[in-house]
Each structure stands twice: as structure tokens, then as C-alpha cells.
Image (cartoon, rainbow, N blue to C red; front, top):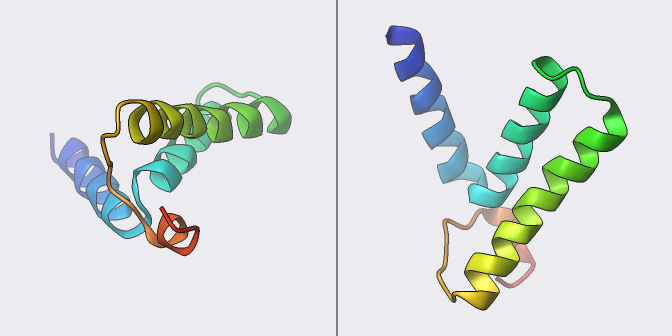
Length: 77
């Protein structure tokens, strides 16, 4: 139970610092490499592709802004 609380706290802190898109890319890459044992290419494609699709769907199509990090702010979003 305490470990779960630590993971949730860490995830919330990372999302707050980096934004939802960068944090989700890191999380997906970590789980694919660590627990799925996928290679570098599939991990890179999926961990970059999923946040990109989420960005397009939520920010552009539904016009629902999600938590932004410094990278999104530098790019002007």
C-alpha cells in the first residue's frame, strides 16, 4: 500500500514538473523496456506516438488543454 502511494506521489510530481505528455512518454517507455522487454525501436515509436496522438486528440480536436510542462511552453502550446 505504501509503495503504491509512493508511485502515485512520484507520478504526480513528474506530471507537475514535465507536463502530461513528457511524463506519459517516460512512463510508457519505462514500462515497455522494464516489464515488456521490448526493443529500443518499438519502445521509442510507441512512447512518442501515444502522447502525440493524445495531444492531437485533446488539444487540437476536443480543445481540452491538459497539464503543460516547460517543453510545451517553449514550443508555444
